Length: 102
Image 1 (cartoon, rainbow, N blue to C red):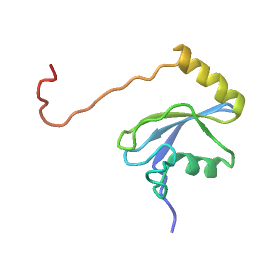
Image 2: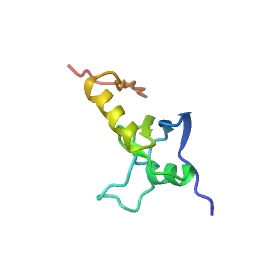
Image 3: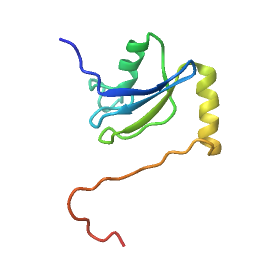
Image 4: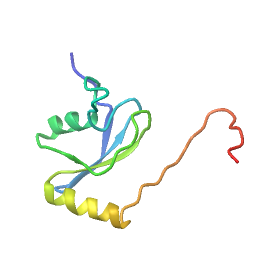
């Protein structure tokens, strides 16, 4: 049985890859859910190389996730995240009516 791929590749070069992750899948395995599907091993098997997550988003969340393709890129992209030259932005789509948050 072929496992469906719960993400699509948005960008890929020699340094990094960006995917659009579907909701319901982890970015990487967790000790709390070791047998659940996650993007990291699927992407590794697809590319034939280890991948390094630059950031994570929750399992229930869909969105773009960036992975480095080597240790040097991993280090450089993490520095960019820490220094703020790469920023995460969240957009929320809500169905129904929200109670006041204030």
